Image (cartoon, rainbow, N blue to C red; front, side, top):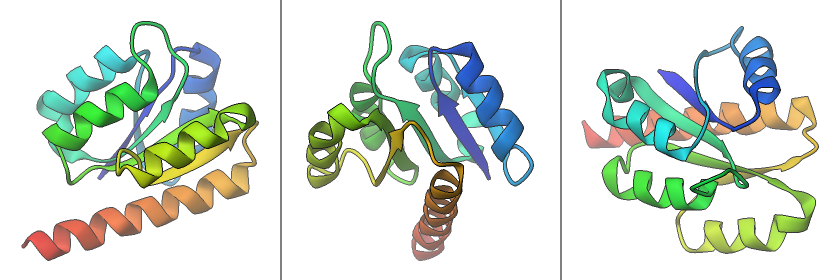
Length: 130
């Protein structure tokens, strides 16, 4: 099972991969369109969790996750937002667009705990589908 991390900032992609790539296989994308390409491509079948930044050019994280929700309902969706966007994250969760959210600046232990919960949720979801 892989985690897809989508963020337009190269440093964020690099650090996410360095920190969490020790525990999970991490795939990165630079924007929502690239993230959707990964989900729909050959690698996409192995994606179980997506973590995406909200503010990106061309497509917000919520817009991308809304598309993923319809294309691949088995993927667990995590939105990364700044504290100022916490109401937006709550609305996205209430509407079913996201499953989890993490606030920036990240507390690494909290992000790790959220990823562990998301991975476990994915395993339960695919276990129910069998």
